[in-house]
Length: 419
Image 1 (cartoon, one colour):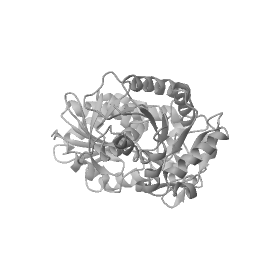
Image 2 (image 1 turned 120 degrees about the horizontal axis):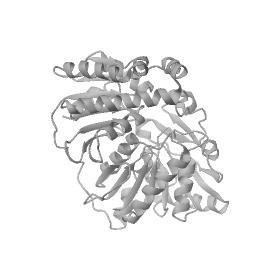
Image 3 (image 1 turned 90 degrees about the vertical axis):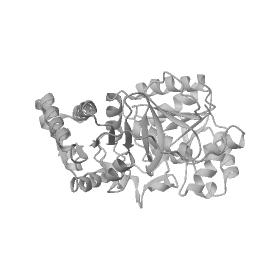
């Protein structure tokens, strides 16, 4: 193993694994606490469910993963979070980054969630989603991590007691040498965390070369695109062909959606127009969870005989607010996750082997419920979302989608790709 990665949610982990695989690293995604080292692996991505848990718990889980990765030979640690920098003033990006630096005896790292291919760019420290600032995007309504400030220097500064700084695009576009010189200047001023501007993939390639000697790198999946080349230059990684197709699994196909992002809502609408769709009644879950889940399963098993199906708890912001006001934000989220996980388990028992899952928290619940311990990474379905195949038996074909990723027809495209 060359690169050890820690992701704060399951869809983010597959996003990063997709990037590394596409750039020539044999990559395996491990679910939760690692227990064994897969053979013939250049990079391992440990997928945690730590984005929205208390910061101290996120730190503990991340440190455990870091120690395991270092024990098994990782030469560099990469901490992956969302391309929209999902976090609150209490963490968890700053606390985890600080803990990893302390663990490895390091004094400096970078933070760069840019992902130009998916419209996430950073300019003068401000994160843009498409053509709008993060704070003006649908992320301002996120039920768990509402992003109200686009200035990432300020966002990160509220999460760490250490100083934060910026490497602006005027420097980044000059290449890796200029970026490395900026790192040295920032460190001389006692700055521990540097936000990096990036508006094109070439900026991320420059950044990748500049961070070759850092013990800890943090960012979205985009900031990792230059890392494989560092290992090639060191003679540790050979060039490889494109990612190979995955073995077919057969069985029925279902979409499970818990995300309420704008992109996912459009995907729900598109699939509902063409295939059977079941909207989960949250009130019914609170009234009699077992009965409500049973009704969903009876409906789905019958519909799956003729067509792929969609089961969703996704809802527009006003509906989400209503549910949270009525049942409590954390309680409502937990009940929905538990229900979708139980539905996934029931469908698997009925022979479903292809699952498209929308939302990081939802993906974590589903993968854990199915008992998946590791994922083989296949070809990209859409930027940031690869096809994956679970290890062990039975084998499941999975597409784990971050809420904001994919076009309107993504669900149908993913089900086709998982055949």
